[in-house]
Image (cartoon, rainbow, N blue to C red):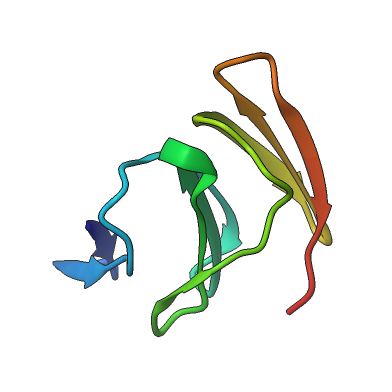
Length: 87
């Protein structure tokens, strides 16, 4: 898949490393963005590329919220996951 990134003056296409659809995103800044979606897929943008994020087994993830060091995601079948993040 592809995600769009805006640098303040232009849009860029960035490969996400998955063919699964990403449904929600959240981040603290341009080098710390997370996205989740189908089949429990999770990715993190580090300012250079999207990398996989390990989450407990999950279903279709639809929502994402966080704060520094923690992510909370919600899923289609009432799934709520909390994960500690490390940079």
